[in-house]
Figure 1 (tube, rainbow, N blue to C red):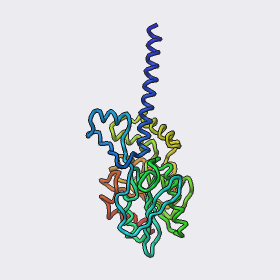
Figure 2: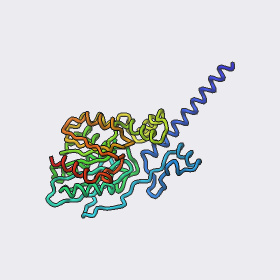
Figure 3: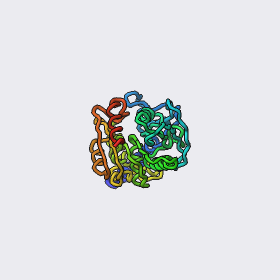
Figure 4: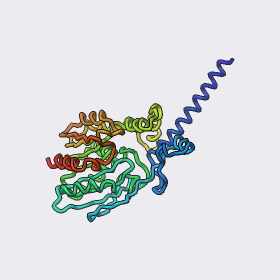
Length: 313
């Protein structure tokens, strides 16, 4: 009789553990895809947390305050509201005798004010710009992010708005999540910009979630897969199909791919696989001593040269 009782207790322990792990994954996935109030305190790095706070963070996930625009363009600009799958806000900056329009998309946890410095470079190069807040950020609707999945529809909406304004030369720029959203928009909807400029897109959703666990020194299995499962359920999409490496196979548009050599969130192998799969004219630029960050900080002049050379041709 002892053995059946031991098996029964073991099964119950497994069931309880399974339920607890899934509850924790559900908390983490919700926090990862939903920003808290902008005046809330962002969760500190692990080194700055007490033991109690660490336990709370492990169970309930981290707080990411909603990204708000804290700076504005120095040039005259117009705020525009566009109706997509969510209402999104954009800033339009017109340049005299413009060579075309560059539409800029930010990364995870960013907003359009984080794109002002890059917008300034494009303006200096003779282009008009449209800076976009994805849903959940800045002046756009909600507090939700889907790491580029549903944001792809907002890329399409922004592109179609500029087309309706009569612009014929449209270039899409995106960093990290913004780059992924551009790739998915082209894969799904076949929008046809003149060129795309994409910085550090992740290879697959699975890889980018795994990288976050690796950076915390925590094994990614099985929590990363559970995080994706529950994140997809909570946000209405299948996260395991979010695959920029596969999207690249359907991109036959001139593409400049940019990468920081010290990036700890996106591997060089992911970038190489995306670059190999791109079907059109393409170029890859790698910046040494640069991580998953604003490339202008350490590479301003070279970034400007690389961008200008590619879009001029």
